[in-house]
Length: 422
Image (tube, rainbow, N blue to C red; front, side, top):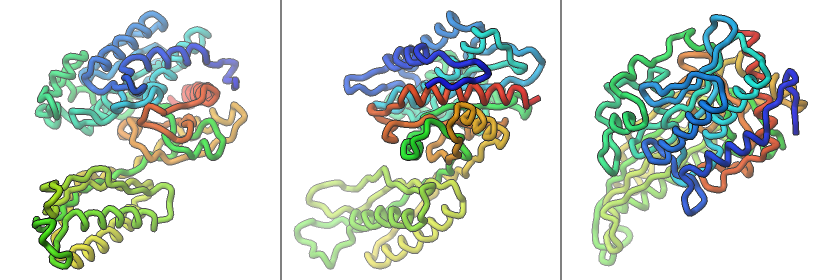
């Protein structure tokens, strides 16, 4: 598949080769990739990117204070830069496309433009943002949060590795940054003309519609709370069923309540998950005294979140009353949905349509760096179809036909933005 973009098309085989080369860094015995913040694989991937940019592009490249990697080319006018990219880190046992596709597609677009002699009015910068994924330092979308002004040095100076105790400052220093200087990185309004990120969808909506690409309308809101159920420990054999205050049984009802409350919203853009559950004393012959869980709810519409919480609250109160035990809740995250910029959305739609396929808009139900970049500049995303909707696993995949189509659509969108923005 080869869609035309002002007579420019990306080099499909080169992009495919680069995806395979980068995927070898951090590959584990199960076939997945381990490339999280501060790991040796993280450092190796950074060296690979810098070496590639040095030998295959005409750019100035550097590592900023939070260790974001930048490759910068000039434009014909003194305008704010257009920035494209994503991240190169992975979740444990992750796949080869999540994040890396966005960085390598941005690199390929830069190469294509430079080889063609096509000069943009705006400078074009490629970025690989630090630590988008959750990691042992328990900070995700780190690079973009610093650029967006969400995180400052005071927020990060005491952060340590959960297992080794290594400081985040040491990890950032080892990969070329300087945590003490990150407060100078916040992007001022107008400093960047626009940010555009490509990512695999990580769901199956495009696959079900048999479409290669989509424009992202907004990035979901994420709400999390810790729910602690406190019952009474007692002997598992001698305590009759009617005398029990079993914290785990009550917690199980809460988990199912979260599922049914989300389903009652009748929306594909509202989901709830309990992915963490810890019981105490966690012994075979003791009735559980307490259960602690983390509930996450994602919604593109704040009204849906509020409806979910109303149903959850009613149900939790009833469970506590029926079982005569205590259920405490503590909100730990309430991140609102982040709309993408209309001008960037329109450019992405036009880029998709130039290849002959219809443009659709989707809400991203995963968080992305583009959400934090939206705080300081026009921000947008383009999705490429995921095979069977799989992501965050070794089976993550995307077809090269869809990748090529999306890359050419992104190139076209970039040329549109270059002409329209001043």
